[in-house]
Image (cartoon, rainbow, N blue to C red; front, side):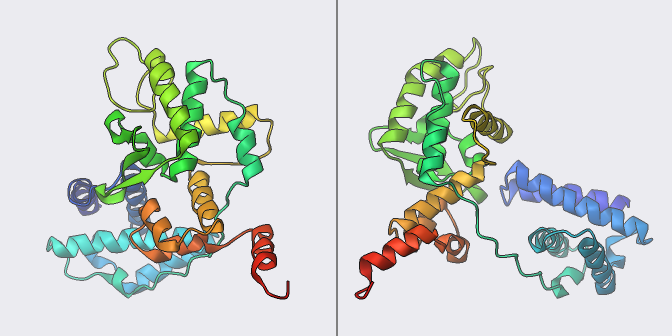
Length: 299
């Protein structure tokens, strides 16, 4: 399996340097390829060039037997297809058997989002007289106000925030940048945190420009953001199960429910394809009924 290891090292360098993918994405790609390498070993396939379409069909069967979602399986196959495509480009391999495999359709689940009353509960628990409370409030407000990903939030720098204009420069997937506006609640929380809480959290020698920091003054990572949200939920005595991406879902859903057009939401989210944004076109039953009653001539 030595050739798989060498090829994977080259592929990871390609993802880092040419594609500029996030570390989170690279870890997932690597895990998917290593899983396939283990399958190859079990099937007695010593080299990547030995893999045939029939081998891939067997691999797919094993994935389905694990009762994985179609979305998860699609991501695994997509990773391996990209891996082989890269090796074709580098003349390491001549064929890409994964090109013959059609990806399973996604489950089409509606993204979970928070209702306004649930948000109000979360926004009410932080102690704004403490540095951590100020940070947590600013974090919550920014996630909801901008719909940014946890990885994008992790990468925010002081110079990215324009408090006068109420906008933030976000660096998304593939190093693509976009400006996202934020409202008065987020601005007030961010100003308080930057003026007071962040300075107190920074320790001597911690000279960096990351906006959000942990309790040791180091840049806050995506895992830390998830931990903070879980702690806020505990304090609110709520039974909610939330994650950073839920604020992104909520941001998009609330904008569309209030009449924002799909193209604008696509731009704010940083989606390359409109189809990625269309999953948010669902609306709550209450909103649907409200719209009907307000606009149908015979309501």
